[in-house]
Structures are given as structure tokens and as C-alpha cells.
Amino acid sequence: MAKYDYDLFVIGGGSGGVRAGRLSASLGKRVGIAEEYRFGGTCVIRGCVPKKLFVYASQFSEHFEDAAGYGWTVPEPRFDWPTLIANKDREIARLEGLYRHGLDKAGADIFDTRAELVDRHTIRLLSQDRTVTAERILLANGGHPNPHASLPGHELCISSNEAFHLAELPKAIAIAGGGYIAVEFANIFHGLGVETTLVYRGKEILNRFDDDLRHRLHEMMEKKGIRILCQSIFERVHRAPDGRLHAKLSDGGTLVVDQVMLALGRVPNTEGLGLEAAGVETGKTGEIVVDEYSRTNVDNIWAIGDVTNRVPLTPVAIHEAMCFVETVFKGNPTSPDFDTIATAVFSQPEIGTVGLTEEVAAKKFDELEIYSASFRPMRHTLAGRDEKMLMKLVVDAKSRKVLGAHILGPDAGETAQLLAIPIKAGLTKDDFDRTMAVHPTMAEELVTMYAPTFRVKDGERVD
Ligand code: NDP
Image 1 (cartoon, protein in one colour):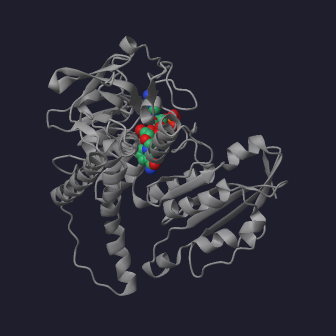
Image 2 (cartoon, helix red, strand yellow; image 1 turned 180 degrees about the horizontal axis):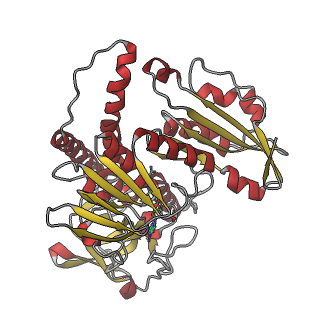
Image 3 (tube, protein in one colour; image 1 turned 135 degrees about the vertical axis):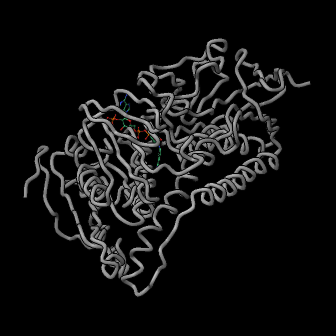
């Protein structure tokens, strides 16, 4: 008889956990997987997927406006929030079903319960009030929005979790943060007709992205009518007798809104997980500390995804899961490759980016060539939309290697995905130059910027 109930027990049914569980089970391993909320995890249930559906919903207001320039007469459009929520919920339920089906088909045992470690081989399944044992354990239980408990009135605020289920669309919202979630939701709510204010502590939104794109996006968002207050934070939130929320700002002002949303980063889900009982080490932000193969300090316990707070992105968690299976069950030690990860911010317009920003590259390379193009996408011409696309390539002058590509404009995320291939492959600007353009497209600019717009020498821009 086997010493343990399972060869592998996975805690967390998100992108990483499901991939690892499904692949391991399909290799014939005895796999158990527990999820306390819904299979699919943050990305599918209350993150990337419903967010993108909301982005599409919010873009229609501009599509209706733009249609007039192309000869269409659109009757006064009306938006119904409950319809969007119901349709989104139906789609998310369908996707959750697919995740469960995949696990089931591969032969994994599925547990709809919170699971906690009792010791290094034992897991308590809370809703079933029993324990199971496993030779190996994979912790893939994600993170949650930072509740910002030091903010008086934080309990009156929502996070992205609740934003997906609001009973009604607010008339006015204030959003704290300047990262992915704050910027994406500011554009979503604005597009749906909500009076939107973004409050960010830093000088410019989207820290760590290329400066030119940050400034341009900021300008465009303001031009659309989103209010952006930088170098400001909420000091207190309280509910007035009329039911509205008053958010007091550090500059002395007060925003009166129907909802306050906090998008101030995410925290690994390690509290109460039984890590001490199992002897698993955590780091400064509560994250599970792992080695290059995602193994914790306890040699039969691994961790992947947001709970390790390495690169908190869905494709990264999936990649870590596949490396885990290679390493542990296929005898092929494989460490995740975190180099040159493309990413998109689904702002409006969108940001797509891969590789080094000009600012980071300038610190690492003696001389850079920067190729930059700013133009009005053809689609905006008849529409009369005064919005310019921005594309930028960062090139090492010596090796000619393209170090980074940064795009602001329609479908920038799609373009960044494709640019990730040549940049990951280490191709040079000359390879870009000898690539024939696809005409007429926006992306053709990427292979027709023949002369540098400017150079960066010893960290300074020069002509
Ligand atoms: P981010 O790390 O992107 O942004 C957090 C923001 O909160 C930053 O602007 C940060 O400021 C600010 N902040 C943090 N603490 C405080 C504080 N105490 N007071 C005031 N401001 C504060 O996190 P998000 O919550 O937006 O998203 C979480 C993660 O989810 C992202 O890092 C990303 O990996 C992932 N994600 C990816 C998406 C995508 O791929 N499109 C979409 C959504 C999320 P500062 O910049 O100054 O540190």
C-alpha cells in the first residue's frame, strides 16, 4: 500500500495550481487539488478575464462616437450594468467548468474546500473536517488585494474583487493606486460613464513602465475626462449621512463619491496556511521563499504563482507550473525563465511592452539608439479622434540588439506579444530593418523607423 494518499497535493486551483495538477495527473500521478473559492483562481474568476470583458464593454462608448465619422447614425446608446454582470458571470462559470473538467478528465481528485498544512506531509481539508497525506505538496494559493488596513475607513472601500460584482454602477468613483489595476479600472469606469478620479502617491502613474508612455497615457486619460491626482493619498474615508463616501486627500481636498476602490498591490495568501507547522519559510511580505526550481526550504514542498511574489502574472504562474512538472515528475530539472517578459496594461489606449525601458537600459549600456514614432492610427482619422499612437524601440548602439519595445495605442498588447519573440531571440535592429512591412497597419512602423530619433549617451539624451 502507498505510504501517502497522494503523490502530489496542490493547494490552490488558480492558473498555476490547475496546470500543475492537470499535467501531473495526466502523467499517471495520484493528484489531489483543493480550492477554497472557485476553480480558475484570480485570473479567471476575478482578474484578467472578467477585467478584459469589462474593458471591451467600456470601449463601446468611443466606438459609438467614432462610428459617425464612418457614416453611421447610432441612436442614443444606453448601457445596462446588470446585463454586463450577468453575461460576464455566465462566461466565467463556463470557464470555471472547463478548468474543473480538465482536472477531472486527467484523473485528479477535486476538493472544494480551504486546505491548510498540518505538517510537511499532511493537509487538513477544512470543510470536510479530515486530513489527507501527500508525498509532495505544491502551494499555489495566490494572493489577495492589499486591504490597506492603516487607512481609516478602509472597510468602506472596495477592491477589484468587489468591482466585479457591484449591485449598481456608481455615478462617481475614486480609485487609489497608480499600477495596473488602478489604471485599468479608471479607464473601465470612465468608459462606462462613471465620473472617475485616480489618486496616486507618486509623480507619474505606472511606475516601472517607459516614461514617455506613462506621460502620454496620463495626458490621454485626462483628455478623455479622467481626473488624475498625483503625489496625493487618501487620509481617511467616511460615509456621510446621505450615504455617499467622502475621501479626504493628503492635499486637504475631499472627493465625494459613491465608491472608493483601493488598488494598492496584492499580498500573498500565506496567513493561516499552516506554514509554521510544516516548517516552510516566508519572506518580508509574507511570501513563500523558494529556490530557482520553486522548491521551499522543506524539500517535499514547492510553491508557485503569486504566493511566492516573484512575478505576479498569470502566464508566469503557468510557466512555473510546467517547470515544476518537468523538474519533479519528468526528471528534467527546469527553472523558470523570468527574462524578457512581455506585459500589457489594458488602459485606453493600451500599453504593450517587452524588454528594457529607456531609463533602465540607459543605466546598463554606454550608448543607446532610440527609435520613436508618434502618429494617428488610420482608424482615428475619419472618426476624428485626436489620439496618437506611440511606438518606441530601445537599441544598444554597440551590438545593435533591440533591448526593448514599448507601444501605446490600439492592440498594443497583441503587438507586444509578437515583439516578445524577436526580442527574446536577441534579434538586432538590422533584422527589424530588413523585415518587410505589412501595409497598411500600425505595426509596420516597427520595421520602418530607419534613423534613430535620438541617442542616449552615458545616461543623457543627445541628438
Ligand atoms: P501594482 O503593483 O501594479 O500597483 C500598486 C500601486 O499601489 C502602485 O501604484 C503603488 O505605488 C501603489 N501603492 C502601494 N502601496 C501604497 C500605499 N501604501 N499608499 C499609496 N499607494 C500605494 O499592483 P496592482 O494592485 O495594480 O496589481 C497587482 C498585480 O497584479 C500587478 O503587479 C500585476 O502583476 C498583476 N496585474 C496584471 C495585469 C495585467 O497583466 N494587465 C492587470 C492587473 C494586475 P508605487 O508605484 O509608488 O509603488
